[in-house]
Length: 89
Image (cartoon, one colour):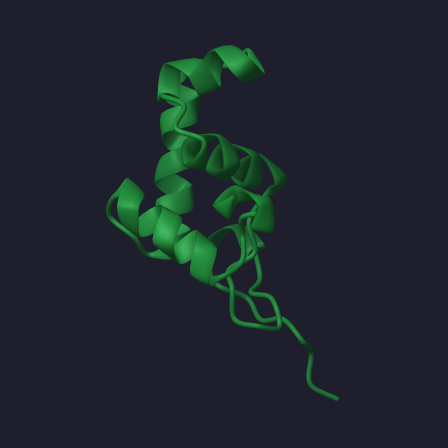
């Protein structure tokens, strides 16, 4: 029987059944805070991590979703239902 997921390359993350890329829990957290309008510095302060670490998480998130800017990131996240429905309210 075929598996519901497949490897996407480096890092061993797999895609979900609907074709949405699997995100790490931290990437999901970063995505939600970006969607709320927080800056990298604010996100870093929120998690107690460096700004550079936030930048790396955002870079990997955007690469995984194949987008080049925040507008595309949010659009793709909404289309793939990676943000909660309450985000639109």
